[in-house]
Image (cartoon, rainbow, N blue to C red; front, top):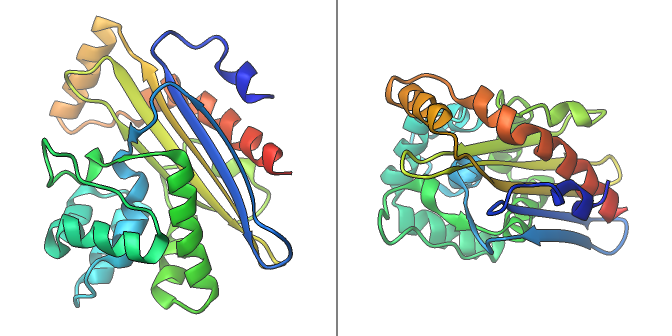
Length: 247
C-alpha cells in the first residue's frame, strides 16, 4: 500500500514519518522516505541501542546495555546516559554516524525527549550496522541484542529471518497524542543492510482513555498494549511500504 493511502484517513494533527535505506556491498545505496506533519518527533526509547554503543565502557557496561536494548529498561538506560553524560553521548554519536542530535532545552537529562527525523534514525543505525560488519564487537553484540528485543509491536514477524528491531513509545500526561516508533536493521547474506524506520504521533483525545493511560504510568503498569492498539497497525504497514519503496 502507498504511503498516501496509509495516512489518508488519519485524524487531523497526526504526524507520521517513514524512511528506508539500503547500504553495504553489492551496489549503490538507495533511500526512500515520507513525512506527514511535524519535521521532528520525540523518539523516547528508539535510540537506546545507539546510546549503548557510545557509552563509556565501564566494567558494568554490558550489565546495563543488554537490558537497555533487550528489555528497553529505562533504569539501565539512565545508568548509561547519565553515567557517560548526555552531551558526551550525543557528541560521540555525531562523530560515528554524522547525525547530530541535541538534548531538549527544557530537560537536558531526559534521554527520551531527544527529537529526531526518520531519515536520521536510519542513517545512524546504518553506521552501527556497518561498524558491526567491519568487526566492531560491541556493535555486533548490540545488534544481536536487538534481534532478541522483546518489544516489537509485531514488526519482527514481518520478516522471514532474523532481524534487529528496536521500538519506542512516549505519551506525556499533558499531551493528547501517543508516539509509537520502530526501527529495523536487516543484514543480508550478500553484505547489504536494509534499514527502515517509522515514527508516529497519533491523536489521543479521549479523556477516559487518557486518564486510564496516566493511571497505568503512575502505578508502573504497562501501556504497550495501548500503544499497539493506537499505533501498532500503522507501524506494521509503514515498514513493508518503506521496504517496497526501496525495491
